[in-house]
Image: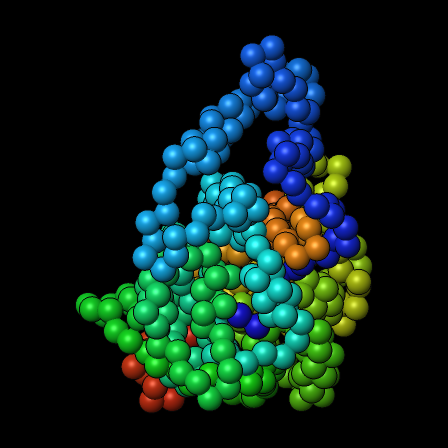
Length: 408
C-alpha cells in the first residue's frame, strides 16, 4: 500500500495510559464521565447523567485472568504483562466497531506504520483493503511487481505466505506483504470466475509509483492517472496543457485502478473544470459544526465545447471517487466502466502514548449532492465490464465505449 489516504496528524493526545486510569482515559476519549456507585461498580455516564456503560464485567474478567489463567502456549509459559493486556483491550475495542480503517497500533506496529507512510518503500505495489471482512486488492499499481505478476482489482487474499488473513487488519496484512527488495512473498488468491484458489508469487522491489500517461486515439485525448500523489497536480496540469495544444475537444480521464491519495490533489484537478466556489466534496464529521465543504479554486479553463468521460472500476477509490463524483455531479463528465470501490472515509492518526497510536475514522466523504462515497461507491452512467481476453490482445473495450460515447 503506497500511502494511507487523508491522514491528519495530531501531535499530542495522551502521553501515558496506566492500568489504574484506563477507565478514566476511555471515558474522557468518548466524551463521557466516570462515576462509581456505592457497590464499587465503575460506570461511564453521559453528560446528561444517564448510565451508559457498566465496566464491572471488564474488571471481573481482568481479575479472573489474574487469579486463574494458566499459559498453555507451547512457545512460552510466561504470564502476559498487564500492559500487553491493555493493548489487547484497546485493539478489541477498535475491532468491535466493524470499521476496517480504525486500527490500534501497539509499539512495534506503530513504528512500522509510521515508516510505511513516510515515502518510498520496498514491497509489491498494490493497494489493499478489507471488503466484506475479506482482505481484498483495491488495485495493483501499473508497472509494479504485483501488476506484472497478474494481481487484479477485486482479488481476495486468503493467505500471505503461511499466514491466514482472516483475522488480520489491512495494516497487519500490508506489514506481511512488504519486505526487502529481491525477496519473494506468496499470496493465495480467490478470484471471481476462477473455481479454485491459486497462488501468486511476487518478487518485492523498490516501488517507483507511476503517476500519469497520455495518448491520442481516434481524435480523443486520453489521460491515464494512476495515483493522487504530491506531484500529481503538476503533472496533470502539464497533461491538460498538452490536451489544449492538441486542439482536441474530447477528453477521457482514466481513473481505473487508481486507489487514490491526497485530497488536495483531487481538489486541484477538479478546479480546472469547475467554476470558483463549486462544491468538489463535503467532509462530514460526527459533530456537524466541524463539517467542511471543499470547493473549486476556479481555474475553469474549459468552455462548453469540452466533451468528457471519466473511466472508473472497482480499483478506483478515495480521491479517484472524489474527483469522478465532482465532475459527474456538476455536469462536466459522464462515468463509464464499473462500480467504484467505495472508500469514502477520513482517518486521523493519533498518538496514544510515546510508542503507540490509533488510526481512527473521523469523517466521511460526501459527493456534491450529498451521497456517501462509502455506501457502495459510484455507479457509472454506462456500465461496461472490461473484456479481459480482448485486453490481453491489445483491445480495451471500455476505452472504445468511451470514445463511442464522445462521438455521439
